[in-house]
Image (tube, rainbow over all chains, first blue to last red; front, side, top):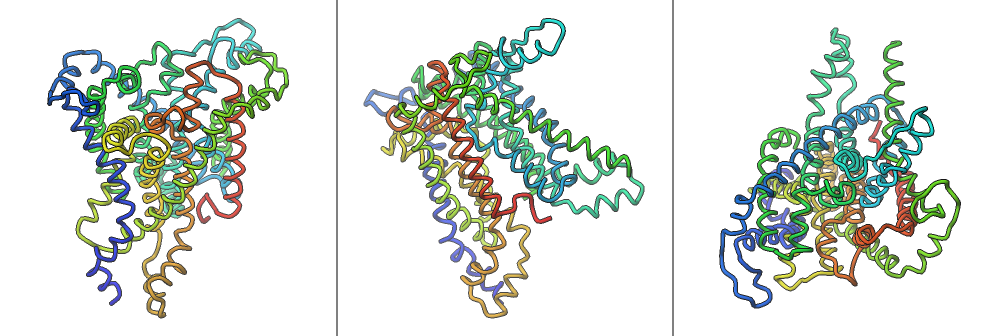
Amino acid sequence: MAAATASRSGLRSALPLLAPAYLWLTVAIFLPLSAMVFFSFMTELPLSGRPWAFTLGNYAAFFSQSLYLTLLLASLRLGLEVTLWCIVIGYPAAYVLAKVLKGRSREAIFLLVILPFWSNGLVRIFSWAMVLREGGILDTALNAVLPFKINIDLMYSYPAVIIGLVHSYVPYMVLTCYLTLQAIDDSLIEAGRSLGASRLQVLKRVIIPLSMPGLVAGAALIFVPVVGSFMEPRILGGRTGTFYGTVIEDQFVAVFNWPLGAALSFILLAVVLVILAVASPVLRRAA
Amino acid sequence: MATTRILEWLGRIYIWLLLAFLYLPIIIMALMSFNVSPFYQLPFEWTTEWYASLWQNDQLIAATWNSVEIAVIATIICTVLGSAASLALYRYEFRGKKFLQALLFPPIAIPWLITGTAMLIFFFRVGIGRGLHAILLGHVALALPYVIVVVSARLQTFAPELEEAARSLGANQWQVTRRVTLPWIMPGVIAGGLFAFAVSFDQFVVSYFLATPGQTTLPVEIYAAIRKGFTPEINAVSTIIIVVSMALMLLTARFFKFGGEK
């Protein structure tokens, strides 16, 4: 009876609870995104009273100069590599947390893994500079231990950007995978084992499929911001750190070509949406 | 059995290696904030000079307070609005519900660079402008979907029969929510709140585009400092923040279990 009443007056009862959250999202996310699409077709921003007109020129700029496309591909590759490293490093850790550790030590270590996440992302990126540069900590430590002289100067290189980004995002992967792994009933694993499956088979047939939503969610949470990253490549990549994101940043804070920046942003958005659409079947199954 | 033992020990060792990877730079950063050399030169010589000069740096202190204030307000708003929305999505069936749930995805999925620049353009155009209020507006929007997703995930493990049972025992809707549903989803609400705080406090990209020279947050200030030339003062303020946030998290962990029920 109560359930029937609830579903009949569904939207009316739900609305007061939903409206504040969705209004906020509309004002701060959906309207701005729509406005950005609009501005990307303009010659000038209609702010200063300067004349403006509609144009496709901002998009033409993307397709006529191979630089933008090259940078976009470089950013996608960066996103892919960082995501893969996060899976390789984060998934086993999530498994150990969910299935090996118990009680208070699990709580403590879980907390330790997600704590860095609370510290400042920028500083964590920059702290790698002290580790990676020539004459930095890594260099000094290795030379103190090794009998021969080596020079570690990873600073301002592609690997430095990868290391910094993996360090920033791997807690996401541990978190999402941990949540799904923890929900797997241990008796399922035991059942598989007692029916004669090897550890590897249980992993492949039971654990990985059941934790797939966590893996995909983690991958999406990591891939997308990495493709749009600009601060990390700027700080750790130096000269080699020019990516699609840094070019967009320049349009807004250095060159002040907002319409071109909006067009470049929108192209990135389109690419991201296509990739997420590909991943969404798995995510929908999770929801 | 022996193999299981060995694998478990390997697992433990692995976790410690991961922690080393996560904490190595943070520890080095903290150490360097106590090092005499402003260029992070070794050998290490102890000093608290950078902490002393920190208190002279009004700009940095102001930015830190801005960050804390915005994160706290954003967390409160997100937790309340987010929990309400999650409950509504869980409890009621209506047309367009799937669509509303799908709408939560873009703010999480779209890179902050895109969202941030879009907010900049839009806020500028409609007169909201830039500054702390704009940053708060943005942070809440960014963190809200996280809260809704986390709380909803917790609600998935909730047995609706419990609500039914409470109702049949004569509890009204508010009592059911307060006595049955809320206590159950509390870990999710706390986790969501922590998420919101982290998203806001750590948020650089969106703040960067919405900040003005006078109204800025710590990450924006730090980015500017890095580009001007990094100083150990930044290490010092970051070390303080890490210690404070860790203490806060540990305190929270005393009251709420993070690692699930088992």
